[in-house]
Length: 71
Image (tube, rainbow, N blue to C red; front, side):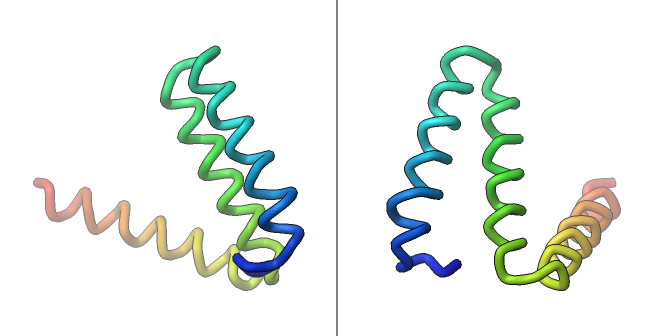
């Protein structure tokens, strides 16, 4: 799935935005951010599991570096 595909523009994006705003109104803001993170993983997973692994590795490295630099 790419950003300008019909499946993204007319299915994935509207569904994600609707779920995000509903969760933002019903639950805490943190939960809606989790929804966006999961949607991002699903979007990346459409291009392959290798890319999901690279995204998770990148997030983990950035988190550890942030902990290291904040102290």
